[in-house]
Every structure is written in C-alpha cells, then in structure tokens.
Image 1 (spheres, one colour):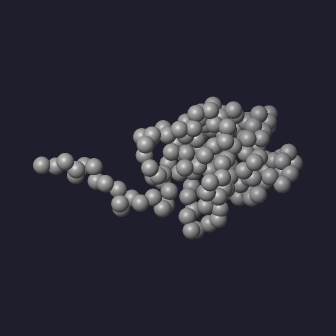
Image 2 (tube, helix red, strand yellow; image 1 turned 90 degrees about the vertical axis):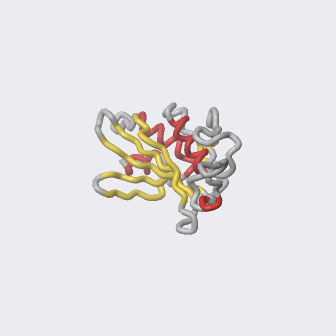
Image 3 (cartoon, one colour; image 1 turned 180 degrees about the horizontal axis):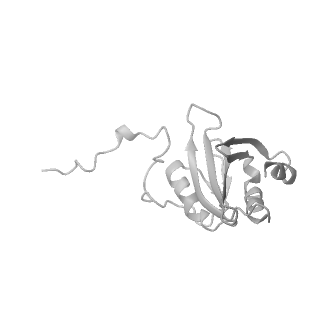
Length: 156
C-alpha cells in the first residue's frame, strides 16, 4: 500500500512505520485530501470508514508542534491504517469533509480542543466548548491550574 502511495503521490509520503501489523503513514499536509480520496476509492484498498480524526500537541518535544491523525478502516478488507499530517502552529490543514462527511464533526472537535484550523471546512466553529470560551483545552500550554473552580463559586 505504501508503494502505491509513493507511486501516486511522489514526494508526498514522508514516513512509513509499522507496529503490530498496523501501518502509520506520515504525509505532506498539502496532499492529505488526495491521499485520503485515493485510500478510500482505490479498488484494492477501500479505506471507506473514517473511524477517528484527532489532534496531537507535541509542545517542546517535537517540531512541528501539531499533528492531525486520521484513523481509517477498510470494512470490506477488515484492515486499519493511520495517516498523519504534521503542521506548525497557525498553519491550516485541508478539510477531508468532501471525502468523508463525518469528518465535519471530527474536524470541529480538533479545532475546538487544539485550535487547528481546517481549510475548506463547511462550518468550522466550536462544538464542545461555548462560543465565547478562550483558549484550547487540549493544548499542552493551556493554563489548567488557573481555571476558576466553578463548583466552588457562590457557596454560602
């Protein structure tokens, strides 16, 4: 499968690793939509289910700081693959909502929790936190210790 991606997207595959028979492929940010569409539509691959899409914050441990991780599953082949995109803070990653409509909710959650923006997303707004919430709670530098303890406020 990695060789097919190398052929179809020369230079876009940055790294391929395997752990416990599960492949992880790190790709160029600009190629993510094409690669996802290829993985979904290729007759020998058919990764037709976006099981999860999540963010990772590597603050001070790795550069670039963020990753977006796409966990894909092929229902007809009962096979999994993980695709990753690395990006620095403030850089958008293209939305894959045209490939998997369910990515809409996953991308909104990553935006809400990490502040990672998805270019071309049809409705990129907060999904878990209130619209007026400041900051992104799953970032490593989020000031958790400074948060007000709402459960202790207004006690008699």
